Image (tube, rainbow, N blue to C red; front, side, top):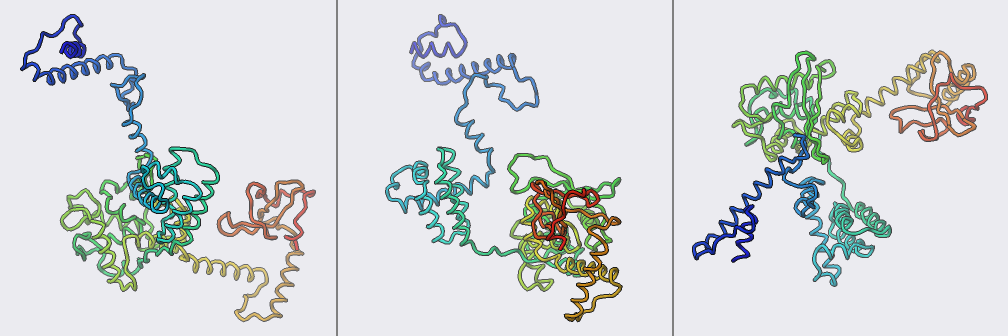
Length: 488
């Protein structure tokens, strides 16, 4: 009891000589309350004293003012920092994948069944274990089995170093599992012209229970803005505004679904009127929707007739009903708007970078898989028109559709004579050559069509920016030769 009273006196800040008197039975029952009160008083004094001697006087600095600089970290703080390194959805997916991998490890390796889970995963991660787990995932037909191997590797890497042999086995296993992955079915394209000509775009008639109040107008907006389903359902009215000075619609884009760097600052997209290019103008269509929904009290951009946000199921059912209304052979989903919008802008002649900036794509490879052959017809027509114009201006006749062998031989002779008389490079229309950096520098005729990764020399070499440069033919010195294959 004396030791307890001494402890209470120390916590309360009293000198050691002033001890508490001997407690009765009632005092013993209340000793817990005394200790708790004394601890709270001591903690409050400690906080006040630390606030007076505060070293972090910056009010914007997110620092725990009650911690002293010499206090070591606790496990809770370390785990909190680890949790910030990845998104919550990613952590849940990896936890589920690790449970499946642990089940396969304990099934294929009976000697690890009695070992704790984390130790079993670390012990089994080797060339043999990766091969067994990869074969089991392939046998089960799990298309995302490569992600399971990747989550297992990340888990073990935080606990021990990995050898190059194990990493190579992991890479080969992921590559082998990817071969059994089935073809990913892309969302159906929703014809934008049929939506505009349906006559129901401005009608306030929900076609599904809990669906948006203006279903056809919402579908058109999602197509021309290329919104994801999650992005459209969570969009607020405050994200869209009208700038009178620039006469443009301002859309504040939030964080991507795959953005994990913690940057919460939104970016703005400003679009002016583009009615001259197509009737489905994002500026005018969005302005019409904002005026229609001006009297609603909901903070969400897309709401149902009760003013509540649209659910994922209701949005997908709405797109399915819209697809049936415009006589689509297959049913559409909310992601059909993103695919249809990318193909719509590509068919109008917009560049891939512009489409990616408007639709918030981070990877052009995914965008190209969406676009597909949308601009193939327009590109073929443009190339054919250029070739017809060139042949007409050079030879004074239009090429006929039925070309005989003698006509081709004659045309080849004319082209050779034209090149021989014109010289290597015309000075009136300066073009660019592909020149090798390595001495002796050699000049090549360039074939520059499409993006720069498709540029090549006439002799067949692709443009390599580390060993080649683009240079005007007017700057060619006389002592640097021209490629013989390109000149022939």
